[in-house]
Amino acid sequence: MEWVKTMHLKEKIGQEVSVVGKISDIMWQHMISYEPDYQEILYFDPKNGDAQIVLYAKTQIKNKPNKYLKVLVK
Image (cartoon, rainbow, N blue to C red):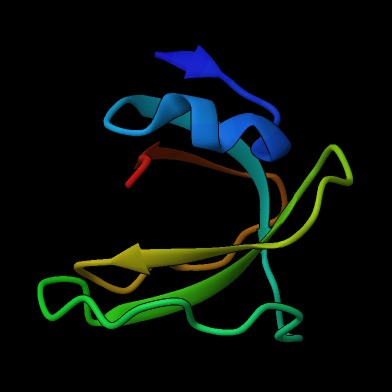
């Protein structure tokens, strides 16, 4: 598992990476695609201040400060 700045996620397609931050109450990004297998759509603010990212999840993720998530970059 590798820690990656979110602005470099395009370089990690098909790989699992770790991100730290919090699920946002404010949507700054638009939903990019519909994924029928990933019904939960979340807006995630990375702790390092990088731009907000959209996360698609199969189940609900509870929000906690400094949430650590392992994600598969698609």
